[in-house]
Length: 436
Image (cartoon, rainbow, N blue to C red; front, side, top):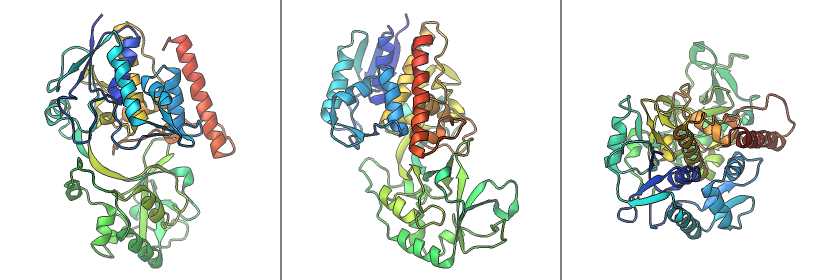
């Protein structure tokens, strides 16, 4: 049977290789460490955690907890090693990062079907291939990847993302739906501000604490996409002539106009996730919550993703990838990990899991597993391949992108637990009926 080349031994690449090998497929895993490292890496081991040692919540009332449990039931390597290397962290799954990476490396190197090749890949190899080289993909390989994209701008080099907020957490007693000048449908949520509210917000924003710029980040990102806090420091009215411009916006119920208006735009088809328009930011996450809670209607906002700005090579997946992480123009090539637009450790591993499973099924002549969007693994894959997502940005797993229950459950934790239970039942059905 055909050998599969997996490029990159991070979380996604190792998980993809593990899933393939466990299904009887020979794997050639190409990793440029230890001969060459990115500025973010210090260890020679695989699956290195370059930031936090936390894989976030391990509870089923949290979408990250659901994703991890799905991966446990599908014999995931990354979650197996994380559980074995767990350190106390309350309801979160945190690991001893050195032990975690060492265990992944040992499992991969000792598998009889995985051949590790230590070299930098600068060309796209022939045959079935999974590219999982991460957000700091080398320039040479990035150029080759870009050449595969039908759109000239399909490969992004900077992540300049505004926060995403759960719709149900927005206070619609203060906010309202309206479009500027009443044109088209009222698709935007508008959070109005008086002069006093705006001034207090502006003063807090201009002095808020920014996240440190890591050595592997490119500070030039600020030239192309100005953070909202930088705009605030340029003058009291800069924001009012930019993303908080109130012109043409009136309350449809009262006709009232405002001194400034923060707008939120729907980020998914279901309308469960909203994007803060023009709010690219480099503030620390607690500062985002503190300062943005001063916006009327967002006092108790639930952030599905905080705003981030850093160097991050990722592709415009909705235009170029399908739900199996395959390149539409050349299906023998799949991508996995953060470069597909999934955000986070466990999400990267989950994309590698799905890519590995589906590649193995293709080579074995089986029908695709087709993880549904009622599972966390499937929801991620369907989000990154959804052509309706026009302003594509990297995304953590969250309940906002998972198919709703279709019936009411009282209490947020109870509702989330019901979604998780349904997802796990479906995973079990797929294991039995499709031998996933």
